[in-house]
Structures are given as C-alpha cells and as structure tokens.
Amino acid sequence: MIGIVDYDIGNLRSVQKAFQHVGGEAVFVRSPEEIARVDALVLPGVGAFGDCVRSLAKSGMWDATLAWAKSGGKPFFGICVGYQMLFESSEEAPGEKGLGIFAGEVRKFSDRHGLKIPQIGWNTVAVRQPGAPLLAGISDGDYVYFVHSYYAAPRDASLVALETTYGDTFASAVARGNLIATQFHPEKSQRAGLRMLKNFVELGREANPVASHK
Image (cartoon, rainbow, N blue to C red; front, side, top):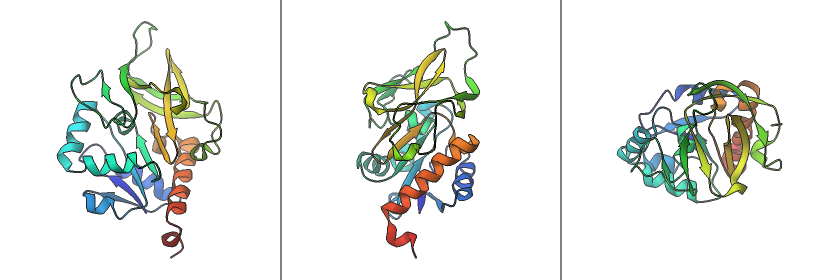
C-alpha cells in the first residue's frame, strides 16, 4: 500500500491515478496513524516552497514524514516541491526551513541564459546512478515533464541520480537507498515517469511481501 501525503497542497488525484495505472494501490494519508499503516510514502508538492512547508507543518504530519524519509530503509518518493522540501532551505522562501534530509539549498534559475523562467514542458535526463533500482528502464535522453523556477543543489554529488540542463545543469532527481525524489512530475511524464512509478510500486511490495500476496 502506497500512502500519498495529503496536506492540502495541489491536486493529488493525478498522482494517485498514475500509481493505479501501473498496478499500485495508493491512498491519501492525513495523519501520523495513517502513515504508519502504509508500506511506501509519497510526498507531492506544487506551488511555492514556503506554502508547502507551512502546510505540511500545519497538517501535523511534519514529524512523521521526516522520520519516514530519514529511516533509510522505507520506500519514499518526493515529487516537485516535495523533492525541494527534502533540502535545508530555498531562495524562494528565505527563513523557511525544509525537512533537511539532505544538505543543500534550492536555487532559482539564472536569467543569464535568456531562457523563459519557469521551465514548463519536456526536457531530457542524463542518468548519473545507472545501478539504482528505482531508475531501472530509464536511459540518457529520456524525456520528462517539468514546471518549475527553482531547482535543488545537493552538496553531496553522489546523491544525484538524474541531471537535466536548462541553461544551468541541475539535479533533476536524487536517490539514496529506497528514497528517490524528482523535480519533474513523473505522473505527467508518460513512459519514463510511469516506469519510475512502477519501479516504486515494486519496491513497496518488496518492503511488505506478506501484504502484497494477500
């Protein structure tokens, strides 16, 4: 069972439908007690960094989400601002603290390249962790869908799973163990995105093989 953290941010239904499309069972979780009953956790996020961190804190699920993501072994998927929130801070919201799972900050795209900000639309990825299980079936040059003005800059380069260039080259995904997070929207990214979600579904089943065979 995959839990999607519902903290009153964005349209979560599209994420749920994408997981269902690849054979996963996904439910919305709205309390620490509900989080404790799922096998894998997804933290989506759209809009502004500050709004998202404040809403997660207000929902009462900050600590439970943080504990899950820090566990190292439990499957966790951060999406868009849900990815950015894993870092310490963002230029978009000075003074607001992220979950701090990873060292680094979220930065705004430079305007020196003459590109439209935000980046909206399709762009390619370059694989930097070819052996990561959650990237099985993902190749250099695959297209994914972005909507963002800011990107995460991890201090630990070994975290970078996928890179993308939009004027600046940035980490479009990070991965460590059973945790993956993407700046792009996998639920909108057709083949590549759905393959990543399917990989995550399989990881959740491996985390609870008894439940998956009921």
